[in-house]
Image (cartoon, rainbow, N blue to C red; front, side, top):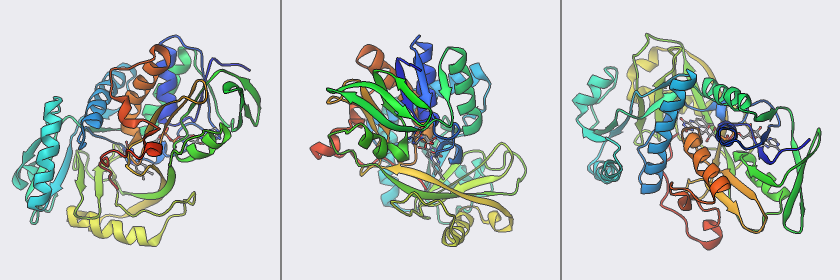
Length: 379
Ligand SMILES: Cc1cc2nc3c(=O)[nH]c(=O)nc-3n(C[C@H](O)[C@H](O)[C@H](O)COP(=O)(O)OP(=O)(O)OC[C@H]3O[C@@H](n4cnc5c(N)ncnc54)[C@H](O)[C@@H]3O)c2cc1C
């Protein structure tokens, strides 16, 4: 077997990247140890936002939303621009968000500060008795991770990409700093270009390639819930409350309310659900929407946030190994970033440069001690 470019990891990052490279006529292979989406991607909270607190993430997410819109229309998977609503409870929070809003507005993201009454018009079930204002961007949204990943995978394959499931990478063969191939449980694949898109497992793949720099990415357990379905369009936007333990909640296409809180365990590869989480998530989410108290919780589950010290991913080329790239460490917001990350990295691989601010995600920043401003993390 042979592939000019081998992507390790069949989550939304690896699949969107394969799709973009195939679109550009590259010969690309994805190796996924289980089935596509089986890592964090199919476990995610569906949210897609441009409301970040730094220029790079705002620009990248603005581009990502354009691509989400384009591909959801072309391929017919659900992506809805139902907005993100951050509830604010203090002057301090409001001032911080005013700064974020001015950065977002500078790049054409139409976020604005609204009153508690306006927030309640958007989501009538909200308890706004303690809310002082809200940050509202109607162009943020949500997409179904299963439909989106599957659609990108099918179209990537139509354009010639090969996706091998149940194919686990065991080692990377490098001679004199050049990649010769990857060893899998199904044999060796010859290649000269490898992309590590394994997120929570990224450090294991980096170890196989003997990456000589420190790229700290660790797996943390994050859990989520889904309630029984309620009337459609009851909670359209993603609602966020940092005051109530970094909570997030929204309604899925099926009608259930999906949500989580910032209850983090790790570093660990353990994914067992916990009673503490269940207790916290019900307490905090029902502070935001009291009607949640009346609903049955159908299911809880866990997945990984692959975290870096500044909650920004590591995206770029590792210079010491010819043609080895990484796109991992998405720290709980990698689903939303994938279409833009695919574009940035494809630009880097095929043209050597990109107009998106990829330097922000420089994998060498940890080694140099140049951590970025911490990216806004939810849940
Ligand atoms: C509860 C929860 C809620 C979340 N909510 C959101 C949200 O609202 N919005 C958002 O943007 N993000 C959210 N996230 C984060 C999001 O899920 C991830 O950032 C995103 O899915 C990362 O995608 P990925 O393709 O980089 O990684 P993954 O989906 O984890 O894919 C990596 C793949 O690599 C494979 N792999 C690993 N090792 C090997 C190997 N040796 N050989 C072959 N394959 C290998 C794995 O099997 C896996 O499928 C959430 C995460 C969780 C857990």
